[in-house]
Length: 482
Image 1 (tube, helix red, strand yellow):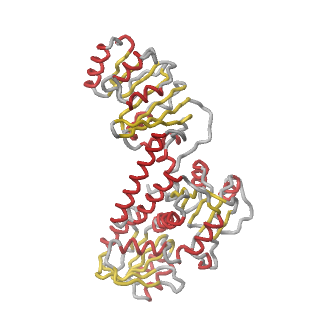
Image 2 (cartoon, helix red, strand yellow):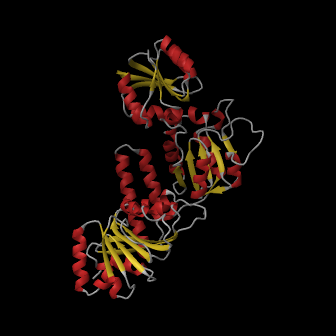
């Protein structure tokens, strides 16, 4: 009666009590569970009356009406979970399954086993389960009519006790929870790896090199696994690419927290905040690479919640690349210029400062400030840009400086620029800009620099494709806008 996909779901049922079959469709799973003696009662639910009518006919046909309760319900909304030991949710997308679970798992209804069969986005479901403290996560794969299906089994026990939350990295969420000897699971991973290679090739053809390299690295890790590299080897590579000797005298870039000799995972962030460190802890990451130094001013004491204290406490290393990354070819400013060049025809670029901090862009054709502002919003993923009120409306030469580059306005003016693109502009700079009819675009310190993290990931994954390298989810703008 059941296809192999639902047979695997039935196999994973604990058999300890009542089973709830969410989205029962034809009721085949409910009938099989009762007829096989796997359980004595099934609650079969669906969001639409028509599938429930179909299920009712099959339940009556096989004579199990007294042991199957049919419920019209949006997910688990109308289900009484008292006595339920197993919940099966099969044949839905991973995101839909998450929506169903979000409405039930935090109520105190005891220990329940979840058997989940996502038709799409299983990696999103795996991450969600892990983040929301499901236990005993396991997974099996089955092949049916040329397609491989995966079924995830997880336990959830309501508790008021705090526990150490863990999170999956992207590659872990794609890899799944298969046992080492699961041959179909290995075939599933191989197919995933092949699809990632195809996606990488397609992205490369469309010029999206950062993503292409990332998908290629994910494919390799899926087949070969992750590996360890020495911190010194990673540091030396970064030093070759973005020499630490380029940093300004007042800066403090380098290996600032040296706690471990090797790592298998790297978290990239603009700043090493407590939230970023917490994410690294939950993901089991050994090294954080940031743009802004975690130690900038001299530390006279290290208190409990200081990020440096927490890095040392959890044995996490920190490499910080600040002005050396801004100045070096391929670094922050170069990335900004490249992103602009993808949108506009550029006649030439030249350094803004002799040190290499910042660039001047000369457009082939002049552009008005509204057009430029709209493109900058897209490049830096922001909703609003601050623009000087009395500047020039048509821009031919644009000075670019990452971070807080308002002090370079005078230099940009001396070099016949019409505008300055930067972040963190102070009040006196706005006044100066308006007095001299210079246009200033302030895209915010965070947003104008955060885009370099994708470039860093690409560079690192080209060199170390088997390291688990992620951009921190918690690397976010430290401000909210009300």
